[in-house]
Each structure stands twice: as C-alpha cells, then as structure tokens.
Image 1 (tube, one colour):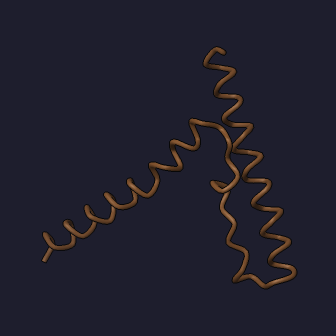
Image 2 (cartoon, one colour):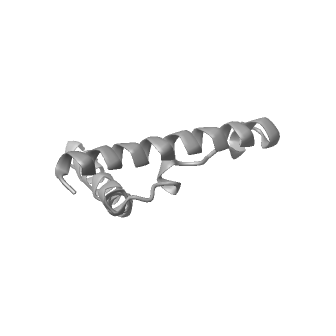
Image 3 (cartoon, rainbow, N blue to C red):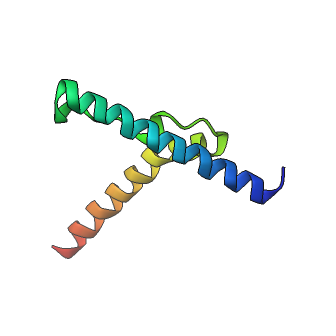
Length: 76
C-alpha cells in the first residue's frame, strides 16, 4: 500500500467516525437530552495509525497541562 492510499484510508476512517459520532449524538440528544450527547469520534476509529494517535492524546494533554502550570508559576 503506498502512502497516498494509506492517507486516503485514514481520512476515510476518521470521516466515518465523525459521522457515526454525530448521528449517535443526535439520537442521544433527542431521547436523553443534550447533557448525554458526549460521543467522541475517537470512539469509532479503527485504523491502527488513528488508534496510536488516540493513545497519545492523553499524554500530550498531560504535558500541555504541566507546561501551562509551569508558565503560570513563572509569571508570578
């Protein structure tokens, strides 16, 4: 599989995940209320590359929070 095909497959998988999450959120919003509509596209990704990205997201968020805390301490 060449790079172009791989990128197309990743985009297709993420697009499907976004659509699936949107549909499920609409259904939950209709029957359970807006507070229950919390489906994320990351729940529905299946591509191995996107699953690796999904696993790295909490790590990046943690580092970002720590850097923000350090910056706020230095400004004091």
